[in-house]
Every structure is written in structure tokens, then in C-alpha cells.
Picture (cartoon, rainbow, N blue to C red):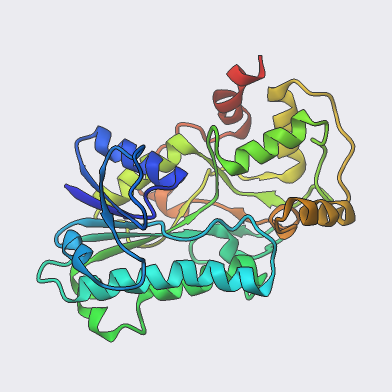
Length: 313
């Protein structure tokens, strides 16, 4: 089948593209700039205007990953940037699909478990209510999903409701070699800063990249999956346990904790959002498990060993 990936030139998009291409799917990347190191057909778009690229969506599976990285300071300007970088491409895709005689049969819409904000110890499945904030996390995610539901794009209702199966992928922190999330965590541990963050009791919903790729394949193929699907390990961990597992895999001694004020100061120096480390949510993938999906890496320590142990030697 033909699969069109918006935002497919990023690290996650490339992983998904390579995985789907490996099973024989035709991959088309919608991109603002053609890259020589992307081995798939690339089609230019601006993420806003419906132009010739719209024809690529006809009869194709759409995977929408478009959006700037969240790892930045939580300023009003950045919140606006993060929102617009997600909402505008989503509406552009919707408007394009609305005029096609053969709309996309499947639409996978990326989202994030951060939509639940700082959720404490409650175990959250796909039926849990979303949070009002923080704005850079839950606020951006709510606007992104609202754009994907296309309630403001009346002309697309026929396509999305009647002819297109839409799956909203609320993803945990994807652990993969060479990606910003795991690089930053591993770097802190290697620098002797691998103690718990804040109180250390905040929950971390995480996922090995191999399970992410398998879940994407399942959502493309399984007609019973639609609506919100949690793409995360069935075994979330507390921050203290995450840092302990990283120290074990990277062979580092115990480290002092990082108090919340120090984390906020460090976030300013690193130009990131301290809420990414100080808040958490305990999410479980109920719908995937009910569909019989089997995780290759359900537990954190073996997952980190698979990703990092060879580099630690």
C-alpha cells in the first residue's frame, strides 16, 4: 500500500518509514525541504497550503507526525509555535483529503500522553479525561487532537467519518538510540547527575522503539482499532526507578537527587521545559492489550539494556 507520512523526515518519521518500507509498502514523505539522506520519494509542501501534493493522499494511508519538538522553554511564543506547527499541517491534510474522490482509508494521527498533564498516581487508559494544562504539554496536545478531529472542517466530515478510519496515537516517551529523549537521559547519568528528579515519584510512560513500530503497523492493518489508542509500555515506572535503571545499564554509581528548584534552573540553562521532568502520568495501553498486541519490550530494564548496554562497555 502507499503510505504518506507528513513530518516523515524527522527521527521518528524515518524509523516508521524504514519499518513500513521493509515490509513492501510504498513510502511518500511530505517535506518542506528535500533531503539527500532520505531514501524515499519526497514531495514538497509548506504544511499550510493545499497544492499539487494533495493528489498523493488519494487512496493512501496518512500518518501525520508534523510538528516542532516540544523540548524547548515554555514561553508564550514557543507554545504558539508548537501549536501552529501541528494544527496548520493537520488542517492542510484535512482540506486536501476533503476534495478527493478516494479519501485516505486510514489516518494515523500522532499525539502525546502529555495530554493528561500531571496526573498523579491514577492509572489512565484511553477513557481518562484530558487535562487543562500545562499549556506546553496538555494544551498543545488538546489543540492538535482537536485539529485532527476536524470538527471545524465541515467539508471533511464525510471523508473522516464515513470513509476514513482514524487512529489517534497517544504516545509515551519513545526510547531509541540517538534520539533527544534517550540521549539527554543517558547524558545526565554519564555526567553523574543520574539521581531521582524532584521527588522521583512522578510516573514515566515509556516505550521501546521496536514496540512503537509494531504498534504503528498494527494500527495501519487492524480495522478494529480506531479513535484514541495509547502507544506505551504496559509497565510505566516512577522517575526514581527510571534513573536507577539507567545507572544500572550505564554502570554508574548512585547519584544525589536533583531537587525541583535545581531542575528548574537547569532547564533554563538547557532551554527546555522543567515540566517534562517534574510531571508525569501513569498510562496503560488498554486497547492494544485487548486487541491481543504483544510487547517485545514490556519492562524497562531489559529495554534499556537492549538500547544502551553495548554502548556502555
